[in-house]
Length: 160
Image (cartoon, rainbow, N blue to C red; front, side, top):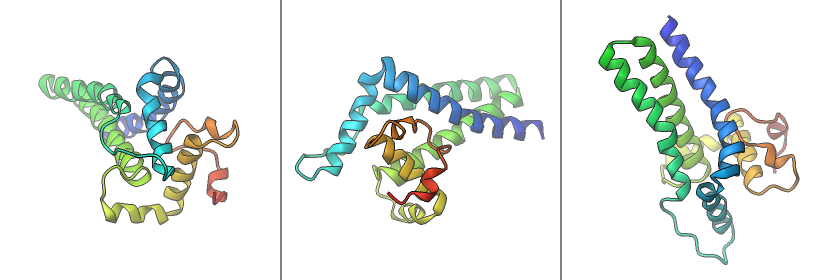
């Protein structure tokens, strides 16, 4: 039971890690990696500019998040420490969820049609609105959306 709680806790904690890293690292000293994600998103929205899908410097952050999970899993299995494995699994599931929601469903970087239908779900629609508000901020409150799964309640109500 403790390992399940550790895994769920690690998953939940990763939303805070993603929020804080997005705000202070990606929009801070590693903006040079993250900038192309915002630029490419605007190109995709603007028909006049050419948008080239593919890898972005922003994708380096995948490694930043994946390496700790991989290390925890390897060490956990090597030394038979189930708590390390549980935390590694929780972080990995968050990474898979983030990739699926952010890259596949919101930004459609991979064309997986059955996942696109999830945008019709009330929660997923709100997630997408909050994320896109961050990308195309109209006011300072829009740029407060640095997380993915936790965001302001106004995006449940707002249809824009």
